[in-house]
Image (cartoon, rainbow, N blue to C red):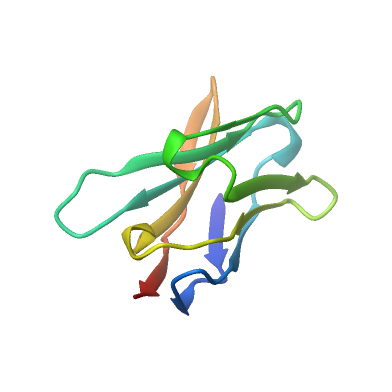
Amino acid sequence: QVQLVESGGGLVQAGGSLRLSCAASGIIFSRYGIGWYRQAPGKQRELVATVSSGGSTNYADFVKGRFTISRDNAKNTVYLQMSSLKPEDTAVYYCNANRFTGAYWGQGTQVTVSS
């Protein structure tokens, strides 16, 4: 059974930092690309950052220079370090593991940034 479990969300003031984690089980983690997505109330889910199985990273323009995605294959975990947080970063953050054989989602973790 595949599981992706996000953690690390919470309430933080604008300008603060949080580190999200996504722990995976039930898959050969190193073979999967991992993405962080977010969905704010009333908005569509949007891509935040990705890290490929080879370690290449990509970021949405709205987080470049503020967020860093990384992976630790030994721990089957992907991280999203978020700094200089803004109120508009408030959303539920989801991780996604994807490969040509299929894709999986976690249940999400809430991030709330107060002004």
